[in-house]
Amino acid sequence: MSAILDNPIYHALITNHLGFSKGDDHIKYYHREVTSFAGMKTYTQADFLKLYEQLPDNGVFIVFSPEVLTIPEPWKLMREIDMFQFIYEHNFAPDQQLEIAFKDLNQEHVDEMIALVELTKPGPFLSKTIDLSNYTGVFENGRLAAMAGHRFHPDKYIEVSAVCVHPDFLGKGYAYTVIQEQIKRILEKSQTPFLHVRQDNVGAIKLYEKLGFNTRTKMQAYVLAK
Image (cartoon, rainbow, N blue to C red; front, top):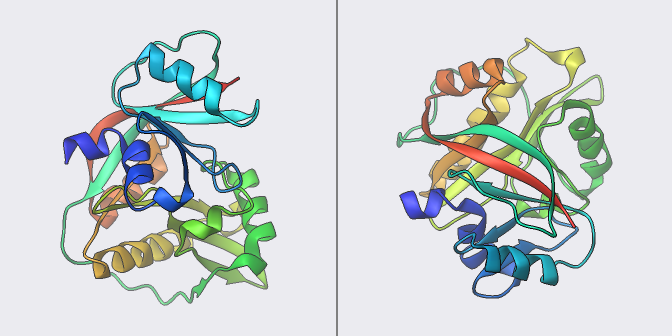
């Protein structure tokens, strides 16, 4: 498990997300319109340079590592984010049932999804991120109030991602409901849920722990630009 989840982006791109990947055996990155993440086999300076040379544009890309990385030139480090990686080590979904209706989200909802992500900042969400699958949302008065979905899928693990709630609808149990549904769907595939959360996001950490997630390791996100 440790080798896979310590390097979840790379392992997703060489296993279940191979169809979304570009690169070679040492460096991988997602199709640009799907999401802005890249992974490397070893995170050596040679791999960083190879990734720099192969990426298609001068936009922002994000890499994860549980270890502190030295970002070599000519990369520009835009931001470093301290995170925890959580894992769900139960074979059953949380049993608390809230009477909240949710619906599957599709391409027709992408504009609303992007707007909610831009407002709440859970992480990047692009025009085809929804292709990573299983996005569900809660609507109130015709507005998208909350959502979550799947992102990285390395081997037998699936990441719960894009968890966000509109500020107008906080405190109603919507986040609990959409995450609970994600856990249920992942377990039904005989896969293990995991996720990432900023270390300073105390409210989210408490919710994930309430749902049954445990901290597996610290993780650093490096936001890089060419």
